[in-house]
Amino acid sequence: MTLCPNCMEWVDKFESPRNSSGNQRRDGIKRICPKCREWAPERYIRGCEHFSLEVIGMLGFRGHGKTVYIYSLLFQLDRIGSKWTDFSFTPLDELGIDLVKEMRKKLESGDLPDSSPKMFMKPILLRLEGIPQMGSCQMLICDTSGESIERVADQKQFCSYISQRANLLFIVSLKDLERPSQMADFLASYAQATIELNHHPKEQNLIVVLTKADKYVDDPTMPEEVREFLREKSDGSDTISQLKKLSSCIEKWLSEQKPFINFVRRARVEFKSVHYCVVSALGSEPEGQKMKVAVSPRGVLGPILLAMDIRR
Ligand SMILES: Nc1nc2c(ncn2[C@@H]2O[C@H](COP(=O)(O)OP(=O)(O)OP(=O)(O)O)[C@@H](O)[C@H]2O)c(=O)[nH]1
Ligand SMILES: [Mg+2]
Ligand SMILES: [Zn+2]
Image 1 (cartoon, rainbow, N blue to C red):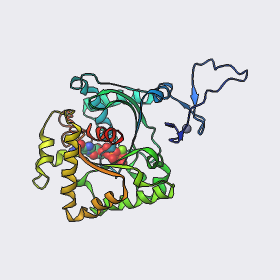
Image 2: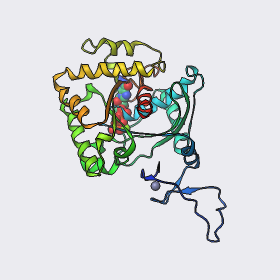
Image 3: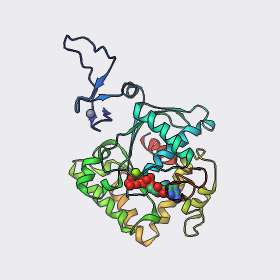
Image 4: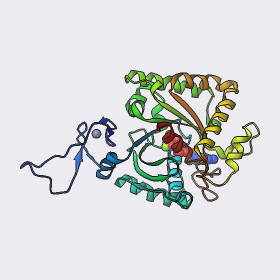
């Protein structure tokens, strides 16, 4: 089974249409999705035959840092080759190629992306090869507007692919919550949407990504392990065992904060597995939509390494 990047439905295989005389089309090899009848990118389809597919869905409240996280992830993949000696990555379709270009231009000039509209945003298709301890995969990562998780009906419309075979990244900036109970409320509505779609959260892995972590570096109420992790400047050298240790530490800390106890316990009950990580996509606080200093991400590769590890 593979995921169609146009309609986000799982399909057995893509079809090769013939022209009316039964011959292969003249405009080259193109295959279509049996469900939506749209062309799917050929490099993605071919790669699906050789690489495992890692589907990552991102949900989170408005303005909590989803889109900036994707930009920062691409920014970091562009640089991590100097540390990961066999690593390389490539976008697999035109949208990905354009986004990588846009991301370079924006983050290098310090501009931040706008708030995402409430509509289906096409996923980014990447091939990652030579990741230490993990090997290679194709990755489909999909941004969602924060507006789409406000109502169960919208979650069902925009996020149904996540409830099937994706790892869910729940993007939360603790300092931007209107109230702590928002987190447990999200779990309840996500579970409802998933069950109404005839799937089950208990078959899914949840990765809670605490974003804008640059705001915690000097916060004495955060665990010292988290602050230490954020102070270290080198990104990408974090091993899975370090990330898992940090995850346990964050979970324990959060489960001791009264307003979050219910979230931590419900997440354990509802999902197959739960991991926590901290990310600073920018490295420091921007001024409006502009960065004052150069972007210096921290921890952005953690969520995708955890997602890949969960599947092994
Ligand atoms: N301090 C700090 N601020 C950040 C960071 N990442 C994002 N922000 C700020 O948060 C704002 C919103 O980030 P987005 O990525 O656009 O948020 P979003 O979750 O995509 O929001 P919607 O698309 O509206 O759902 C950015 O414009 C930045 O001002 C970070 O790592 N650190
Ligand atoms: Mg966005
Ligand atoms: Zn399709």
